[in-house]
Length: 80
Image (cartoon, rainbow, N blue to C red; front, side):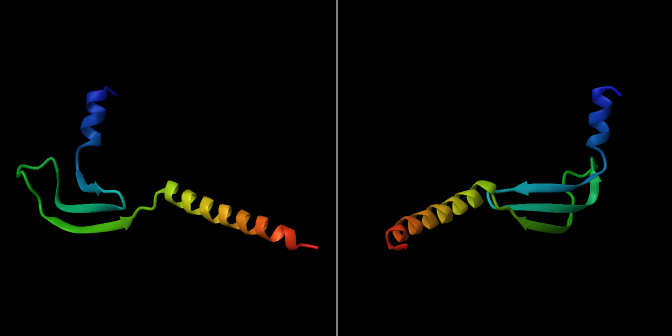
């Protein structure tokens, strides 16, 4: 299949659009499918999901690990 035909079919009958920001991804569902005659289409519903970046989680985990190591080092002189 030629690339132009493939792109046409990938971008035809689209009715879901996505908006991203740092912590949220929102999906908009429209009444009309793209491409349509009007320049705008009614949004019939939307769904938002919260995004948690993996780097944030790994940073928090590393802080906990460092804190645990510090506590273990402090307790070493008191062990029998």
